[in-house]
Length: 327
Image (cartoon, rainbow, N blue to C red; front, side, top):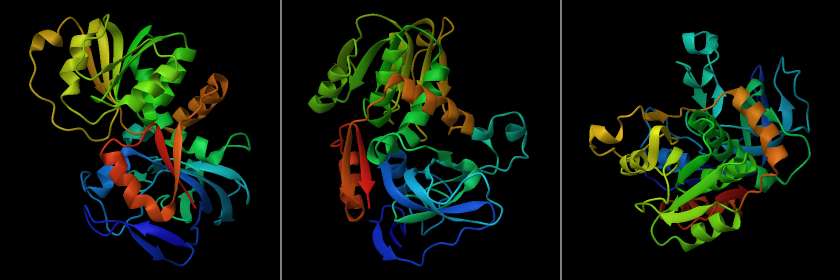
């Protein structure tokens, strides 16, 4: 197998040849057909997340086919197409797992962060955390759903059922969840970084109700706002944009520091929430919704060896929609 390997914080990924991994009990080896590139991959590569054990292979929006079953695996079959998401293992014993909140598990493992991920030709994954995907849909188009879609869905659920929704950061997650929200009958207001004409064009093509640049005042107060951009300065902006009793959901795993803000913009029962990881039930719910809503992802495909260049483009805002690597 081949893999793009991170050996130190901020170092370029190195293409390495390795022996094919052997699945342990309860695991499967997956031959990877596509892997989306997520902003979380940047946080891993840049060393912004704690407790990274080097070397590590990033990537956690994996589409592939089961190539080998480890001992005890009966729920999957060789040749079956599966998705491998960010959450790759939970302990099943802590208070969070026992109460149905495995996304907050005290002893989790994460694909592409604490176990090798999808910037490779193969990986080993816990069979219980692989999503059977069937044969409908293109691999490249499906890959962003494994994190941008799943975290987007969880953030949309936490945002509540309000009819007017602001989305800050119109990238991989934003363009997927805008489609879900529109399908649900909500009005969507999209905010992009200043001068990002391509993101604004994508938002308009998806039928959002208003497009503006971050920092602009929206035409009306929102019931809720979701922040996908890892920019803490957007938090007070979003709080000012939501109505009394509204919610602001921070959907990233990492964000720059939130500046101080007056209590008055939080008062009147506005809520500020964060999203952490996902549950397997999120995936079951979301893949049904994605099929019903006819979600179409805007993707740019690239070969494995170009992972460093694509990460640089993502860092500088040059990727519209989602980037997906192919073998």
